[in-house]
Image (cartoon, rainbow, N blue to C red):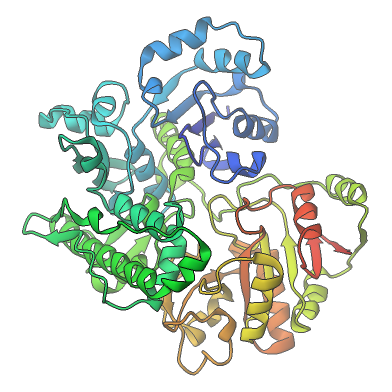
Length: 566
């Protein structure tokens, strides 16, 4: 009989749900994709009804059909078992109140934040044996890990005699073999001054610099993109290395005393901000290389799994691969907090006897596929012109070769922050003018931010310095010097690109599109950016796609086999 496991991330940002059936992920979705609120999380008493219902509806089941629910939350009140008792006796009138009551009558396994991250990486990786590093801004408080959450982290802390001091998870190291994950170290920030404890972590370090530069600590991607424009003229001095590992300087944050106040001021201080971005990126890279070298020395393992928000830093990921003894590095596509729900579901899979060797993970297209009837209805409701193509890949490849900007919507959406060819905006990479036109007409983002390529995997070594797969666009590598002028639209100022490798087995129709384009042009790659405008989540539904298309200067919208024009 089939078993259903529901994983939930109930964080105050990037909440999500994932449903596993037997040995594969059936569906997963982030709340932001459904509410259209960027990084949408849970508020008190909200179990993310949108994502949960999306998953249940996709499977055609009710909450009563779920065999196990596994959840993580960073909320203190959700760390209190009395909260669940309150829910059981709550008789509110809102529709979802009844679903919460029903949910808590099922087995609910709460696990710690970093443990969920560890499961999300190792169980999706191709490795049987690996080291795991989880590193982010903050996970759960140590009291909660020891007294409420269940699983390997709790057992490790209790057996080691750890005494909780009110610190928060910053860095956790595990080993894994044969499906068994074993903690070997956990680092909590636990100073006597609460705010001082928060600045002693790599995630918070990057967050604070991003807040200073852009006025938003969540703009870590922008900071990473800005870094190559900087020079080593603005020393940060946040981290120093010791024989035991590293230490944070308590005073480093005090130098960030003149945050940007307006875009005019930002432009005037570009050199300063670029220098700070360069320095924080350099300190992060040096620190993680130091840390990963130590982990390799302690474990002697060949493979490394990364997870946590820091693992989305694709520049650092490649340098870990290049400058540590690890032979391979795996990062899951949803390495940040949205991926917590997958980790929770995979922990449940393990609890019910599942083996990682039996688990199937082919690609990141974990959203629902919309039917032709749903697509046509949405297009008709929009009032736009449309027709059905007889050969969608061949026809769209032709449009791309003619310098058209294409919005490309196919099958299930990607899970995580990267568009990987199912919710993408596409154009040629053969000119800087095309890149700048895309930014000015559609994306409306800072001109220093690079765009990424999707390349047929078999041709990746011809264009990039790489001998590895990069299916989730989480590795930045050098563009070969003789190809930089061929595809300048995806080359960053430092000669690099954040590459997605594409295969027919893993990417299906997206691979076929690039192959058709290559046959027309001789170029086996295209520029790929997420199907959204700046500040909005990636589109999820056909209606979302149509609304985005109507509000931008995208030339052509493709949904399934349908071509839509204005």
